[in-house]
Image (cartoon, rainbow, N blue to C red; front, side, top):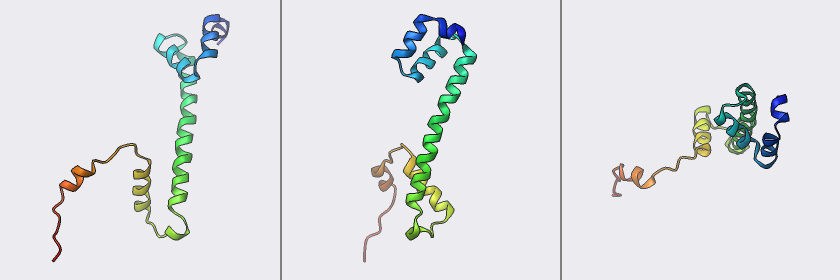
Length: 103
């Protein structure tokens, strides 16, 4: 830690770059491996906490007084769909099903 603090070049780089970019560049260079590992581990906690809070907020919105009858499985499915970044190919999905004609 002292070596890192005393290195003027690294201190300057730390001041002008985003923290995650700084630690990632140190990881790529292989310097201070234990310090970099700890810093990246701590940084990952904030990202996962944010994701948990966001999902909990979605769950609260989804399962309210008017929708309290949702089963755990259905709530899990709704949360999974609302939190994924995957875009469904609706044309492909609709094309697989045989449509019934009305009588």
